[in-house]
Image 1: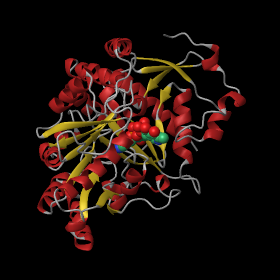
Image 2: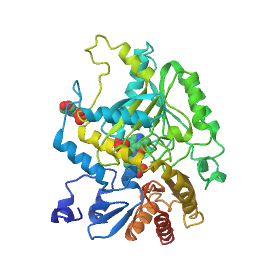
Image 3: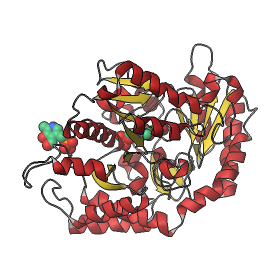
Image 4: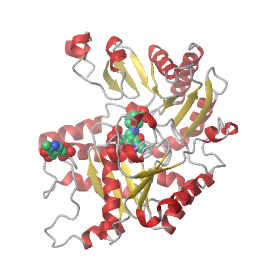
Length: 450
Ligand code: PXG
Ligand code: PLP
């Protein structure tokens, strides 16, 4: 497994050019390639054979660590048994097994699983289900979708329309009709909130901004509100205590569906099976991806309440008719479903949820020890996730996080940089000394950055 082929380590510019890399500074990467060639446990191995601590669990998706034998074997067995099966109008056992497992681990009432191929696809699917649901209920004017500033809901047109990260929207023109709640990054509302540990105690009233959007657009024109329980991509933005409860109350009172985008918060990161469980609020629709397969296969899903599923069944026409004209070639891909079953079994068997909840206070202390470190203006955390905001270098707001991440890499730590933040989301299986090492590398990298 640790063998590398010459092809994998070839790094000349002509060879690298063919892959237009996603969310990457292609010119910089191709001048200074960073090749990861193997992975095991919480470490990657780079092309020079150096071990690199996986400080973001891949891209928030490999909480159980890399190279898990049970998952690898399930994938291999499934590939040898049924490598592909159409999921339109025919079935295969693995998707039903995974749907039941997801039903079990998500809050009561969220019982119907629609498979997609990624988190972005799950978001598009949820937004379309929300609109089609109201239409099925005879309320076809309810089409507007409400997101939140700093929200990340993937990269497709619906997702960037409800999303709230400027750079992900500005180059792409007209999206779908949306509106946005204010974000809950409390230090940006009031500096006194910087370095809050866990949930901010003030700020729940930001949910009341939804009432203003309802006054403006009218509930008869609004299909759904979509938020991440905590926002990951924006740099780990935590909901104030009572905020999600208030959103739930307002949505219920005004017949608006509430969608939780749990692509990052689902299946362990929060020290609970879902953000919904961690924060004690149940949405009408939930999107999941990433950790479902421990990152080993691309798979996402929407989990819906019975009332929503039933509305489609009741208005679907004759039984042989399609009730929802939507799906992907790779929806419920057998190999991805087999990986999902194995990964969720492991999550339960290893008590990963309890482990994250148990480690979270240690992680919180360790991460907040960087308060006072050079450039750091705010630190936020929840479960095994943390974001640090860095003061911008004059005229170049994104430069410092990039430089810090490169210094971390040189010292054997993969940290993620984006915008003005550095994010950390270590695997659930990390040990305390490794958390200490991670924080120490990060502190040194901050110190060494101009
Ligand atoms: N919703 C949420 C809440 C997400 O975090 C998506 C949808 C899209 O999922 P896909 O599978 O289409 O990427 C995401 C993905 C980061 C980072 O470092 C975050 C994501 C993806 C890659 C990097 O913040 N979130
Ligand atoms: N484009 C074309 C021409 C197709 O035939 C299909 C699917 O059949 C798609 C796009 C969508 O691909 P997917 O189902 O993998 O999302």
